[in-house]
Length: 313
Image 1 (cartoon, one colour):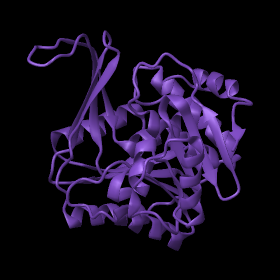
Image 2 (tube, one colour; image 1 turned 120 degrees about the vertical axis):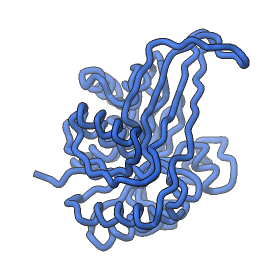
Image 3 (cartoon, helix red, strand yellow; image 1 turned 60 degrees about the horizontal axis):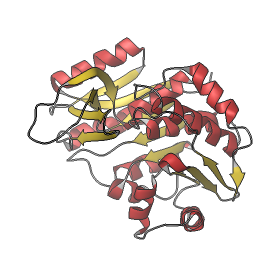
Image 4 (spheres, helix red, strand yellow; image 1 turned 135 degrees about the horizontal axis):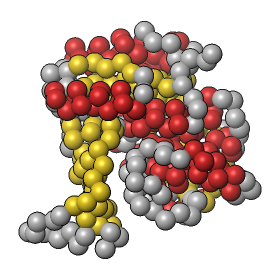
């Protein structure tokens, strides 16, 4: 059996979400349909890999009573993991969906302060695991150096493995270079990375291709929200429109996209097929009340419906 896809989440969270009506300032807002789930980029990626039938193993930092609750939720889900206990308390993230106004409000804390001993232990833990694909996903909490993901890319080069990074800002820019197989920026993240606005699809493809040709990453998967996604490698460039669903929430859709891409590529699938799986998983999450996949049957339906929708650029 192939080694599991290992994900590393340095800043996990308990994700609390709920529905509301007419959110406005200086009023008590009643909520309903509350959901509490284990969250953080790599944890969500690992869940998507498992949902698709792959084997994943999550590594994360956890601290305080919230960290213990995170572990309990992952135990209930059946996710295999290793965690590094830290002195700080794992964060809570909240999102509220106003069903009347049709908008979403997200509140994301920066996370606990992490010591050098704690983030160093996470590196040693990952180094000791058996993996071919490693995914570093999510923000870096205070105390973790900005080039932390670059250390993971260097680890992948030493081991002959493949490293995927899904982050933003300095954490993303510092990671780019040898060892990075895939990055998955949003349009805003890509614009911030290169320092200019990308209005047309041609500009977006050129920016992604420039990163690939400069050796920053082997594949750039650019997510465009309701418009779809562009994927560029050294040999190919392709676009797939977003699958049309009734969107209930966008929380977790990017992580699901990344998880499906990695799962498919790890199976040896072509890049266009990986894009179709990624689009199907992100659509399923958007149409559900969960931040991870709920229905493999719907994912399959969406995947089959994307046949012929991927176009070369």
